[in-house]
Image 1 (cartoon, rainbow, N blue to C red):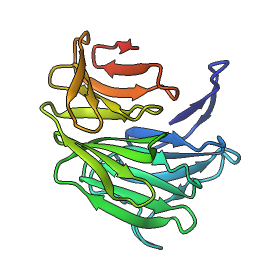
Image 2 (image 1 turned 90 degrees about the horizontal axis):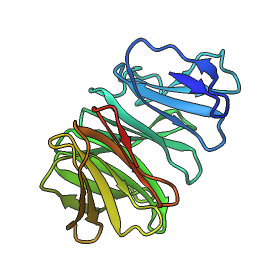
Image 3 (image 1 turned 45 degrees about the horizontal axis):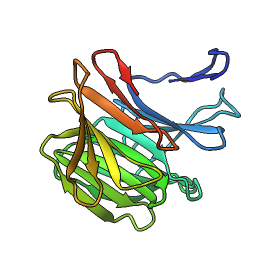
Length: 223
């Protein structure tokens, strides 16, 4: 994984891994990053001491370095106090990690493989959006319970909740490459956007909700 200067484009730091890195998350202070991928490990790097060895999260104190049975798909920081991070993996689990003890604090298991995990902080509070099989789950970050679930006609590759209105969410799809917008309360399809010529793997709203972005295997990014 690499850390880049957003103004100059210069690479500031390079952190070596033994396998593919699938997800990187940086805390709001810009002082630490969390990585996860095909090693099935979670590493925490200190950007104020980039030469130092990373800290490894473990299921229990002194436990194994491998913390998921499948490849890690996504890692995020919880923003309430930034004392916890969350990981989602192909083993159908979402796990919460306490950075004070560096161990697992909670776990949820899903019936189908997980394809994405996103954190949304807006008018609906802090929610985690998880796509698994044909379903989208909206999980309350504080209670760690499912606030809402919708099963869609097309299996979503990723999903993003609108940050300021919270009345809609957007999904990508690998089956047809279409990007769809659904009603948050009912799950009804509201809009369909075509244009990608390959699977649409990633979608996300901008922080102000004015734009949505989608990325596809066709090498294009749509706004």
